[in-house]
Amino acid sequence: MAAHKTESTTVDYDAQADAPESPGDIAYGRLESINLNQLDAKYEASKYEFWAYCAYWIGNSGLCLYQIAPIAFQNLLSQAAGTAGVLHFAGRDRTINSIVLLCNGLSFCVQVVILLALGSCADFGTWRPNILIVFTYAAVAIGFAWLGVHTADQWKNAVVLYILGLVAWSGSTVFWTAAFVGLARSNPTLRRKAESLRAGHISRDEYDRADSLTRSRYLNVATYTVAPAQVLFLAVSVGILYALNANASIANNSWGLSAVIAFVSGLCLLFTLPWFIMEKRRPGQTPPAGMNILRAGLWQWGRAASHIWKLKQTLFYLIGGSGTL
Image (tube, rainbow, N blue to C red):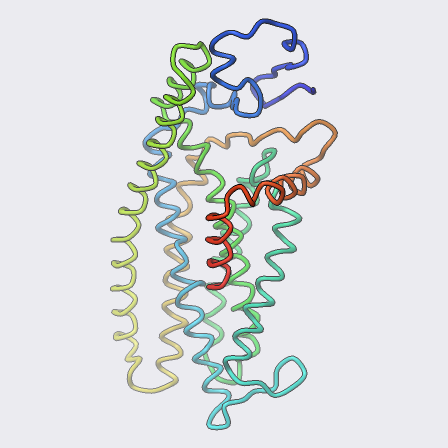
C-alpha cells in the first residue's frame, strides 16, 4: 500500500503494516478515514470563516440564475412566439415547453461533461477553490449580461444565457458544497475529538456522533441564516419591479426582470467575496497510488456504482431527485 500524503503530513502505511495497532489506530481505522489536515492547527476553522461560508450561500443561493432567469427566459420566448406559440429552434418549429426542455437537457449534458472532467477536483488535490472562483464569477458575469437581453427579438441570446447560467450556477454549487465537510471537521471542538480518537482516548462511535452533530449544527445555522436573507432579497426585487413600473407594459416587465437578475448578481459578487478571502484552502484527498486526479474521480464513480445497491433508499432518492431537473 502506498504512502498517504497531504500538504502538511505524510503517513507511510506500509512502514506501519507490521507494527502493533494501538487503540487509537484501531478506533481511527488507520486508513482512508484519517484526515491529517483536520489535525493541523493552521486549518482550524474560525467563526469568521464559517460566517463567510454562510455569506457565500446567501449571495449564490440560486435566486438569480436558477429562479429568476428562467422566468425572464420563458417570458421572452412567449413574446417571440406570439399567438402561434411556436419558434424555429434546433432544426424545426417547436413549442415553448419543448424549447425549455431541450435547453434543460443541453444544460444537463454540458454539466455532465464538465463534472466528469473536473468533478474529482472537488475531492482531490488543491484546485477546488480556484475552480469555484471561476464558476462563481462566470455566473455573476452571465447575470449582468441579462441587462442586454430583454426584448423578444433577443430570445436566441436568452437561450445561450439560460443554458450557460444553469451550468455556471450548478458548477459553483458543486465546488462550494465540497468545502463543507472540511470546514465542519476543522471546527475546534471536533478537531480536539479527532486528536483524542487518534490517541485512543475515545471510540470511533463517539467521534462519529460528534462529527454528525457538528455538521448538522453547521448546516442548520447556515440554512436559517440564508432563508431570511432570500426573503429580503425577494422583497427588494419586488420593489425594483415596482420602481421600474413593470406592470405598465410588456417591455417594462421584461426590462424589470433583467434588472432584478443584475441586482441579485451584484449581491452575489458582494456576498461571495468574503469566502474567497477567509477560506483556509484545505487540501483535498491525495489520489490513490498510480492515479491522477481524473482517474481517481472515475475510480470513485466506479466504487459508488458497485456499492449503490447497499443504499437502496439513497438510490431511489437520487432517481426521484433527477426527475425534478
